[in-house]
Image (cartoon, rainbow, N blue to C red; front, side):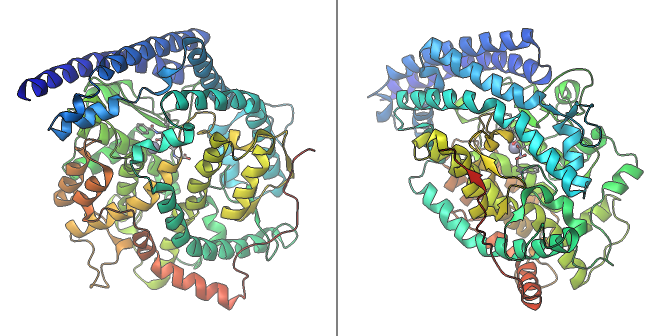
Length: 601
Ligand SMILES: O=C(CCC(O)(O)[C@H](Cc1ccccc1)NC(=O)c1ccccc1)N[C@@H](Cc1c[nH]c2ccccc12)C(=O)O
Ligand SMILES: [Zn+2]
């Protein structure tokens, strides 16, 4: 009825205003803690989390009173808000359980963010931190033993120290999920994807992408065998995880110098040029903002530049893992990132700025819709722009390259550098929540946690630990998102859909034409295309007000995640890798009879 609709609008508006105010308060205390880890900030954050949970519970009880009525409303926009606000979340836990749950998550994240290890070359100095120290060693060292030390000690001082926290956390998380009508927390995490075939769809995507990954793996293994010798890197075995340039072997971009196909061609890692041109983190963020503005998207508000933390502050503990913050008041938006002047961090800057651009585009929607169409969309926005920024053509435009070599060999070099961060990530992006879903569902039991992790790391990534692992270790805990309790499948989804977004935007920008060999997908740079920017903005403005297949269709014309686009982007490289591996008689895939992990009897 008209009256019911009118009452519903007013009710939702009232909750929206109050919810945003409560959100601002809670977010501020969370920011204070994440950017300055002290007992005072920890207490304030814990108190604010409980207060916010009380508000959520009150709002949820008032929404419940509308059950049986809101379903009869005709306006889908109103019904969808009721649908989202009918899920309470962890605030459904009894107060003492919620307090324990929140403290466990804060404690695990603090252990991770403050962990330090001793220097391999100077064992008495024990203040090396993940950012910037350990990431630099993993990126630059080619000393097998030094890399093994850093890899092992990092896990000793993070994963091992939170294993028991995680056991309690899983039990409380599942208790909260059941109170929300889910079987376990894994199912509750999949709710935003609104699809009961989602897991199958993901498995199908991985099946389509695995062959390309296997070719790349075989090629890189040969290059590492040449560097470290057959004893350490065997012909048919898994690759030791600490040799891949990254603490988690999730991005192999930093061993490009060992893998470059045509070394006599110009290097595409513009880090040296960034340093020699005096780039600063501030300059990197301004460069990214200029790209968004060139697309006719929204620039950062003054508060962003006033309150963001874009360089690691000295003399205090903080969570250095990058993050973007929406303070729910359509005014205050921030990034916290311990930025270094490297090409890799320029990409991460775009990733974080993509989150803030999404915040800005949906800031006028009701709070219930101020989210990505699904979490993968939120992770993809910045990466889409980074696909254009990474092209030699764009790097030339912004003065970070002084020449572009337009020939097949330079093309292969470029595609390999992109594959070392985009293709190598796929099995990692998939396996983290494959492991966590099995832990939440109880399929993987506590005394098998670490070996189940290494089963997946071996099976999907074809890597092995440099030293044998056991159930005294808890290696998943050495990756931010596990102690940080952040779902991860969103990144796998992002790495697939970002190429679908890229293709759609490149067509609008006139930069890609399937029938024009001079305009392949991997050479496209959408910069300064307002047609592309307007199309992207139209999708971002929807927030989560429409189901994600509809948002995807508005931008790309299709309603499904489609792995064929990322394969099209890398097609020239896939053909080249297959030929090169064939020519060297490389064994595709991996096998081993080593025991990677012992579950103590
Ligand atoms: O974790 C991140 C970046 C951090 C984040 O921007 O995704 C951040 C994670 C986070 C979530 C929740 C609390 C704190 C941190 N996500 C956000 O800040 C965020 C903000 C609003 C909505 C959604 C996400 N990247 C992943 C992998 C990755 C995907 N694309 C990349 C591009 C460049 C570098 C890394 C990646 C990683 O490092 O393993
Ligand atoms: Zn992100």
